[in-house]
Image 1 (cartoon, rainbow, N blue to C red):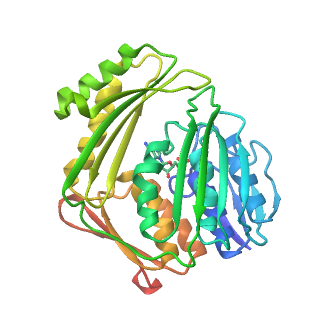
Image 2: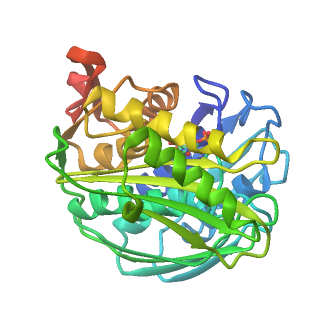
Length: 343
Ligand code: AMP
């Protein structure tokens, strides 16, 4: 049985999720210790526990240590089955991170699946729905599978209550992805999502986007969300020929709306400045499908601690090289290939 140190590198939930995902794909059992030791509240939170239970159900796994707060867990996968699944987090924990855990196995399962996931759909420190739908999923589809993502209800912290449906048509084997250039700019859209809050908040956020990025009024939209609790997210999506980058900032008590706008603008500018197609979050999330494909390459900026940690965990489960090669201008070539090519 493999032993994974949950405190390594970035020390967050990603280490657990990647381990679960790859245990399902490879059939390899593992034990993880010091789960999320790098976080303020270490151990399994509701969201992580739901990810473990989802992986258990899909992979007919034997599990011990899946209690809330647990710092150690053992996971012995059985046979992965496709089909219809419903997972409710029971808090505002991120549904997209639960999806991240089970998706790799279902992408190559023996039949199609439909998942209904309930919890938070728009959470800080997790991919928001729009990121999955507009940035991540289209790239994954280029690798062979089909993904249909539907946001049925928004869920914000702390009330949660969101719902996302995901229909997955698998493929026999993931094809390599090559993503070295953005291509020509195609479109851009700023969406200020609001639930149970004053529309003036959205207007002030969008004013910053128009002011600082020069986006036109018709590229800016206010979307009112039917959600059980209040919430606000500003989503900036910039689409190029080969990739779409989605950055998000969240409204928070005590943070003025223009500041929410400035944070999103700052993040998008960072992406635009390095000129690489793959942004910070997309980079750490593409590593796993790329490793499963066994070859392929993309260009990103400086790899984050998340990306480096994810790479280290992937290499424990898969015999694959994931090389990070510095390029000019703060860019990095990430390449999957035979193990001897490891960097
Ligand atoms: P962890 O902090 O270990 O639980 O992992 C968080 C995951 O969420 C990583 O895969 C991040 O790339 C992803 N993530 C965090 N913030 C965003 C964001 N604003 N947009 C897209 N993905 C995000």
